[in-house]
Image (cartoon, rainbow, N blue to C red; front, side):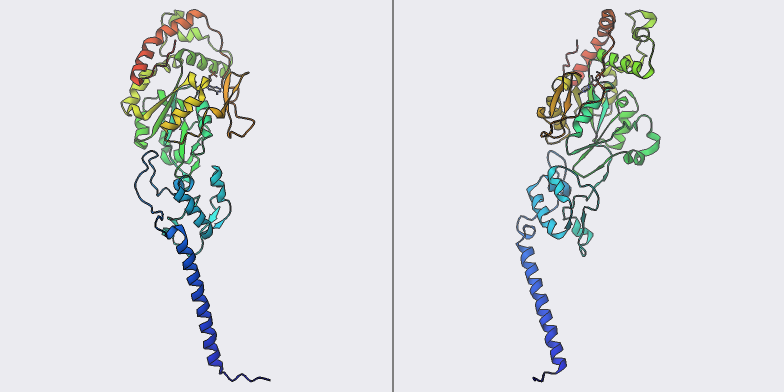
Length: 381
Ligand code: A3P
């Protein structure tokens, strides 16, 4: 039988020092692993206010770097060790995390530390639109918005908000509440085609943000008018004939310019109003006819204007022969795609040739002025 001759106080001191030794060792190991990580190496990522020359983001926009930048990628690897991770990997598939609690901060990190971390949900909130499709009604605005939605960096409203024409008195907070949640690098877009023909709208948008990008889809004003009339017929059933509204006293040489269906097609008049507020370079014109026959090309131009990666290409489109319109695939690997509903691309009523030629004659000088103002020849007949 052995007798323990070391006094109890000495044993206590020994136990304490062993414990401190183990703690110290742990701390050393931790410091070694952290310092061997890229974060503390020479090319560590430092947030700055310098703006990206093309997108206009600075690298405080953490998400931007998370998705695109190589240094951001390293951040994510490191972040995964520091955060309890659930579904952050979704970001690499171009999807957004589904909830704001996808990642949780490890206890002990201060909020300023979190600025340096790539947290997918950081900065996820409703934002005012950076771009607005302002018109023109029946130009192909729904098709354009649906095509843009395929881009992972675009988030769009569903219904038309009509904020700047009908609900302006409700204020910007109301408007913002209609917007989808976005991450800092994503662009919020809305479309309300009546904005283009409402005189107060340009200055109201400018007041919200003078850098708002404006997109206008234009189409031959004669077919646009017939399309608009077709919509009226489908909504109200039997209606007055096109001729009785379009001409004064049924005289095909006297156009009724007060009829909204005719007035909307005076593109140059409305554009002049916009150009008294916004510079031309802030408005992008989409060729409505070309959006049907060559959607890939039109989408390339729109993406360039919006500062987006050219993700949507002609490969995303296939032609629905029955409807006579292009449809879009959300992913290139998808077998099926998304076509617009039957309210878009309706068959038009056949109008007498005299009616059409009179309308063409009427619009021609306005179209010519519009081509000059935009520096684009739309080649409408
Ligand atoms: P029609 O129904 O007269 O053919 P908006 O969305 O601005 O109301 O425009 C509707 C028009 O978009 C349609 O008018 C149609 O010509 C045009 N359009 C353009 N691309 C289309 C597409 N991919 N599918 C359906 N309609 C499209």
